[in-house]
Length: 328
Image (tube, rainbow, N blue to C red; front, side, top):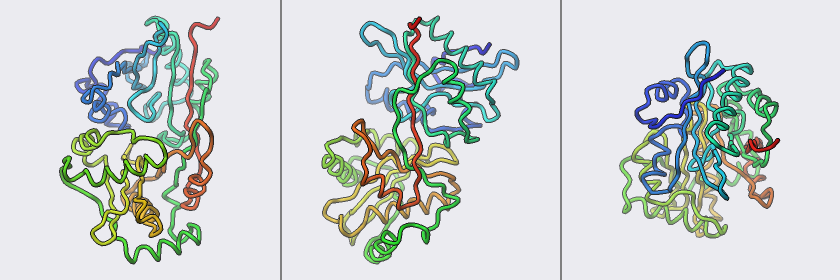
């Protein structure tokens, strides 16, 4: 059976770092998720390595945390990032998945966890996109307890000429007056304040708050400058829209923030900056561009989903799996 080992400090864990070197994922990188500790989020991380009982090699890792709820100990994978679950070695197969999941369930029971919650990315995030891991989870007693839909573009198929005619016309018109650029260099509270105000105002109109504070985004961009990519769109000297991309791996890029100023909404700055960031991602060798989710707990945001579909983005499910270990 797979041996499950808790990594006390992934920043100094040679096995963890070597595993990530071969199948990198930004959210599993201590340089990223450590912002939760730096800014006092109070997350008790419980990160796991899965060692194959026959080869002695690490077949998977899992970013996790523990939480006390109503006197019960829960394992969550994972607070502080968008999604986690198992991150598998490239050539793992269904037999590896079943064995590791058996080891995981035994570990959870031995450690006194009453429930495990795994928030997983769409299956196209896998190095070899398939649904074998989902099959193994479902057959091992996990249940899908919630789903969200994320819009993902296959960049190998993306061409500007193929997007909707209405978008093409509006973009061709808007790009005459709008300049789009990547922002490099060290961020500070002074030079980032203008960008964050656009994001904050945009989210307030939707009665939500940005996932990250201004200080947290500055920290992440400065610590991982090649993985956090910031675009700006300007009309003259005025900031009209921003876009923040997270480079999850060499194949996957995630549009974490897209926000436009209400003042310039009719000029199409948000549409143009989205297009330019998609084209940049394709030019830089990414395979998939995730525009992010188009729903809330109340259901599908139809207008947002339709907007993304016009950029050739298809819907893929983000699933949350749970297993109750106290069930008979």
